[in-house]
Image 1: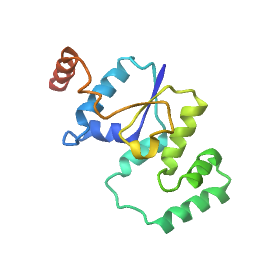
Image 2: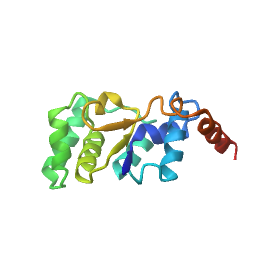
Image 3: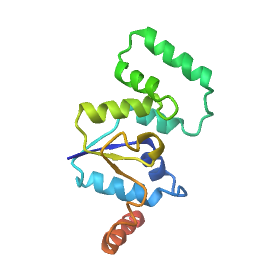
Image 4: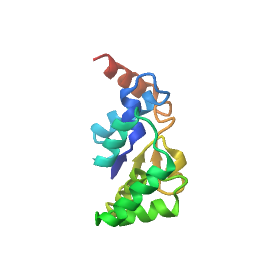
Length: 147
């Protein structure tokens, strides 16, 4: 078993006011305790997480960046092909995530980004995760916050 942690989970874990904070806390607690097996993420996800507070880039800038990557010789072909097939929903980060999930045979994806990943991967763990836990586990996780 394994799990890939996406940007939204890291972000919600750090933002106590985020609507998904308790889900992120429960997912991360279980991931770090080994419930899902090995835990994966990428530099792309870490980069995307740190950039959430910065201004959005317009579509021309995104296109210029994709063209640069294509001409640079940097090997993101699989991710770039996914972006080009689904540009309305996939960022380069999301496409790289899907590529890694497939290449590494990762069984679970922890994300709140259903817009990008619904119907593109097998098992999404995210929204509602905390509320689906037994009361005893909710209590244990809430106790971890107070430590």
